[in-house]
Image 1 (cartoon, one colour):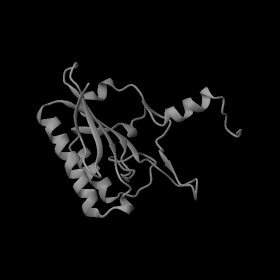
Image 2 (tube, one colour):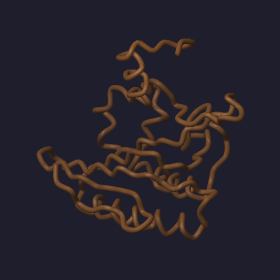
Image 3 (spheres, rainbow, N blue to C red):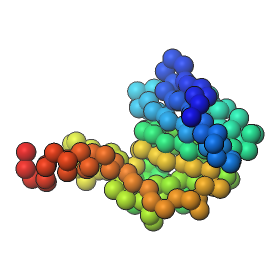
Length: 168
């Protein structure tokens, strides 16, 4: 793996490139700041920088795996996640634009997703859930995806130390 680039200042992303496969796969790990604590301009500027990196990857005809806590509400229609909250945030609309041309797809929405799709649950009201951690891949990778595991590490760690539901 080769580190390609990383975000600066309040951009939190890191791109690594796996060049031993054809096409090369670029893994873009991203943490999107919480939108209600940012201006729309900041959200847009951060996404524009990430989108430029995605464009470079596309121009090289390489594959992309964008994964991370994007903190973006993306809705529940064909571009969102079935059963998700219907809200679409400003940043979520920009992610949806990436998905519109079908060059990329949202793995969270696949029937083979396990352990989710919910990656956020309100502390105030446990029935309020949303999918904010996203996995977006180049469409040419879709045939190679057999399972999408969401938040599995937390469950695995709990099992390793003998924690079961309802016990401390």
